[in-house]
Image (cartoon, rainbow, N blue to C red; front, side):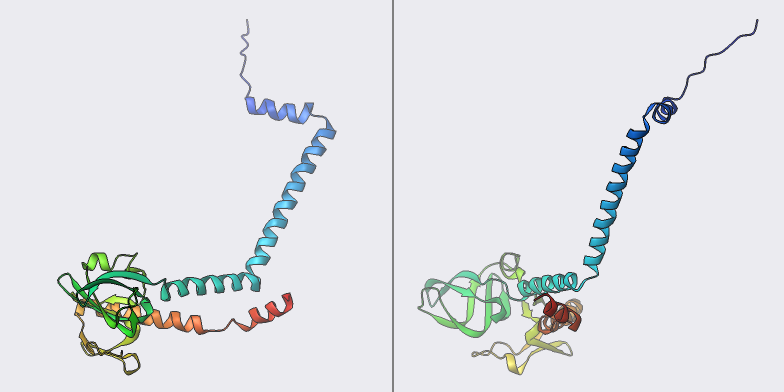
Length: 227
C-alpha cells in the first residue's frame, strides 16, 4: 500500500495566495493607488528638501547662524566679580572683550583691562581688578572660560590672544592694545603652550575676518529678489 505524506504549507505563501486569488480586483487597485500616492508625496517632499539645500536661502541661514555663534564666542555677556578694592568690599562688572590678561600668584589674580571701569557702586574706577580665586574657579565656563580669546600661556598667565604677538619665547603687548595703566608688556610663554597660543590666535583672526565679511553676491542677489 502506497503511503501518502501531508506536507505543511508555508504561511507566507498562503497569505500571498489569498492576496492574489481572493482579493477583489477593485481592492487591489485601491491599494496600489494609495501606495502610488504615498510614493509621489515622498518624492515631492525629498525634491523640495534638495531644492532648499541647494538654494541661497539655505546658505544664508547657515551664514547667519555661524555669525551668531561667533558673536557669542567673542562678545559674551559681562561677568560680575566680587572683590576688595582699597580695603572696601565691592564688585566690578567686566566686559570680557576689555580683558587683556590675567596674572596669578597663589590665590590672588590680577585682571588687567584695556579701559578703566567703575565698580558697581560707582565708588571706584580702575583698569586692574584683583580677585581671590583659584585658576579652576576663575577659568570655569561660567566665568572667564566662556571667552574664546583667552588662552593659558604659563602656570601664572592667561592672555587675550588678540592683544599679544609672539616674538621668540615672549608675548609682546601690541602698541594699539596698551591700556591706560600699563600691565606687563612682555609675558614669557612656556613651550608647552606655544601651539595652543598660535592655533587660538589664528582661529580668532579667522573668526573676526568672517564676522567682518559680507554675504556672498549670490546670496545678496537672492535676497533682493525675495523683497
